[in-house]
Length: 117
Image (cartoon, rainbow, N blue to C red; front, side, top):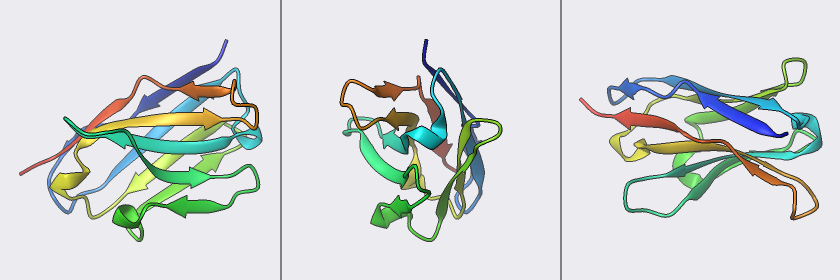
């Protein structure tokens, strides 16, 4: 059984930092393209950061230079370090594991990040 469990969401002031974690079980993060998505209220789910099995990282423009995606292969976890947070970063953040086979596409339940003074 595959489980992705996010944690680390919180209320933070603009300019602050948060670190999100995603604990994976039933999948090896090194074998999948691991992604962070977010969905703001009333908005669509948006891909914001990706790390490939090879370790290549990509980011959407709005988070480049502020967010860093990483993985811990020994712990089988995914992380998202978020710095210089803005109110527009407020969203529900999801961890996603995507395999080469489209049938292998798994999601966590999400963790809420709210950026507000």
